[in-house]
Image (cartoon, rainbow, N blue to C red; front, side, top):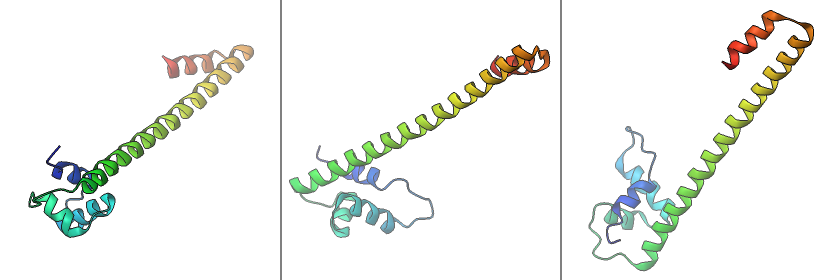
Length: 115
C-alpha cells in the first residue's frame, strides 16, 4: 500500500463543508500521530518516501477508528433492541390485562399495534 493519502483523508472524517482544509489535515495528522507538515505532504502526494513507522501509525489509527465505529454501531443496535423489548413487554402486559378483563377495545388496539 504505497498511497496512504486516501487513508489519511479517511482519518479526517467527518468533514464539514465549512471547514478549511488545513483544519481537516490537522485533524488527520493528530489522529495518526504525525506532524502537520508530514500529513500535508502525504495528503497531497508530495512525500518522496513514507517511513515504516508513519505507515504503521496511519494504519493503526484507521484500525482504531474502525473499531470505535463498530462499537458505536453495536451500542446503537443494543439501545434499539432494548427499546423494542420494552415496547413488546408493554404490549404483552396490556394484552394480558385486556384479555383478563375481556376488554375488546384494548385487545383490538394491541392487535393493530403488532399487526
